[in-house]
Length: 418
Image (tube, rainbow, N blue to C red; front, side, top):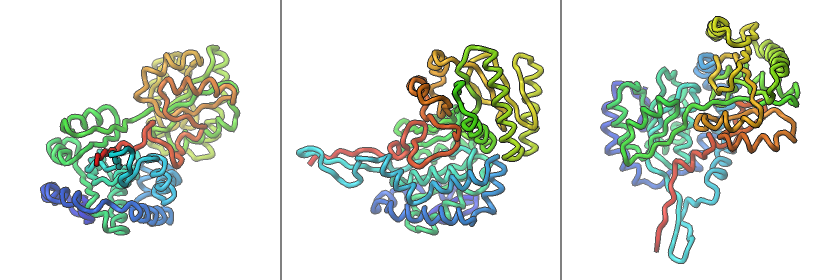
């Protein structure tokens, strides 16, 4: 489905809509700036509708397909709330004036949108493409959204309902379901953009670079890796929180824990911790409920192949596993409640993690308060953008994204001399 000027259209109308952008975009840019308060009020109403279950017929099956809990979907829906969006504006654009502000004897300054954003969305959470557009709207931009392959319709539904809540948003939102292999069509859409916003891994970023013209900015939100760093001081309740997060998220988010680094050089101590955490992981797996049969099958196959390699110690039971590796490499796990554990003394944090600086996101730091004083600076210097407790997947209002504020990325400062 295509969304254009507030109307849902069949894919057969795509060519007609793309041709119309040549005329419609300049007309929109000549209008009065987008009213943010009306946008925020509409988002808040939409958030309430989502929380009241209005979109459950789409959201619940999608949550199951994406291996996410329904509670996680509700958390994402809360990001559309009035309180959350006002806080986002205040934090991300603090001190930057939307109206002209005198900063010198003859110098005035104001914040302005980039103009047109083309969003190339990732498919790991279907709410996030819609939220990417909301961020673009908050910054005052026209937004062209390329849906991820295999999109099941939740983002289109949310955005079309948002426009019903506030019809003035209609000329600021276009959604296209264009396959990634239709390069020429994507280049035509990118031609209208002041910036291409790409969500995904290295291949997606590389593809977006080929679409963006030299005068078009590329804003990358790449796939990231997150992990836990644990000392022997970690408490059982902290480890339970981490294990529960692993089970609830099934490790599919950028913020999900892929594995644990243990602050010790002693193999015996590391093996003792491995048994301790695996027991906790089994408890939380039972409490949350087993993963789907498909996920368990994929995990079992990966663990079986790992056993054949015979290079690591494996703890596996009830569809979950912990693999104790002898190396220090940061890597993706087998997902679906299958984690790795590796030794990493604190003196090795920067040498080991710094080469992955472009891929690092979150670290669950489970240690004593005194230990954290020395460990936090090391993790920051290594390139970690977010240091939290065991609840890695919980995104609190006001958090940055990969160490940057999207609204800063989607706006520009204009100086005016009078």
